[in-house]
Length: 445
Ligand code: AMO
Image 1 (spheres, rainbow, N blue to C red):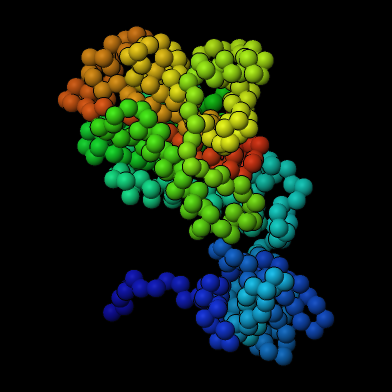
Image 2: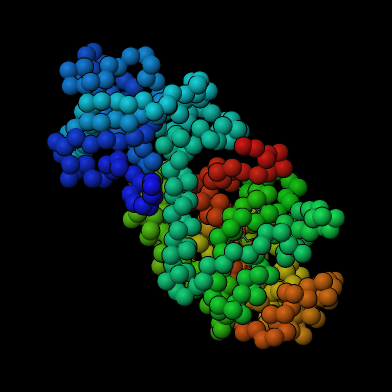
């Protein structure tokens, strides 16, 4: 009887191992990224999962006969000899001297855009997004999302090293967690339910189980406006931790996570950092400023008249970003003690001045990437706050079980993965940092 062993799936030799395989015959599969025919020989650039490998074809050492059948985006397995040489800077580089090419599949049509240049030149963002499954094959486009993998991986690794448990909360919910009008309603067998705006209600409940939890998952916001920083579905990197001494513990944990992430990108994603010319910030410490002090700074230093004294508009965030960079030499700044009126029902008010809260946002190069803070843990206090916010506590009975049956002082945050990626890479539009964006005009691909 045939059995399945679950052993090694990939018999290809990784380019990283070419150094150890010089003069040996190896096989590598991938896409034909580019064919450059020269007199008497040709370069075939093979695109593997993360690399471009130069393969040299010459009839005298190949069983395969190069003809017009082999085209760009053909899937092939190339067998050949690893040949070492030096690049212009004297670094070792390797190429494959092609002995044979096995064509695994051929595209049905030629690509509608040129993807085998260093970057997608002169193609509008909308077209790039319309053609995402193939535009992402461009090395620069794909590097964005490999780097994004590194961000989420760094977040996960750091938190797991610090005693956090990974959770998966439901996305079909009985209530919106963040209030406001941007909640998607859904018909659920005749009942109205909501798509999760955040894992807030569940991550708090799970503090009562695991003390420290995190989640990296999609959340949904029915944003009615087409802006460069809002998506209708984005990846929220959340954590929540119990037994805190104050909301500064949350900011400390985030600072640690960001340091870890940036270091991981520099070390294990160096290729993508180079392809993207990513400006990875150095973080030693992150300055903090109270909300009202930030407002004063905006009015006095930048001579700007805010339209809303309870929140910042994008221009104000940019001013704070500039100030942080120029005067405090930091790409990041925490703004703390937001007005109570603008923060959700679960936020703890500052006992010293209940008009403000024990909460914060983190701005990165002038853009809000995180909201967080300390939560209310006392059952009666939470009920009162809900009533003050015009909510019916009865509708939140299951959420309130956590408070009712004992909750520690706790807090947490939500960090927008696409927004962090966007400003790390200096993009003007969050969609550039989103694999398959959902916005008011787009649900495909
Ligand atoms: P908040 O609603 O501020 O807080 O969201 C947290 C972070 O998520 C990102 N974000 C978005 N990214 C893209 N498109 C959007 N429409 C969008 N909306 C928000 C931002 C933002 O800083 N439960 C709280 C977090 C907490 O306190 O734990 C929450 O969701 O980067």
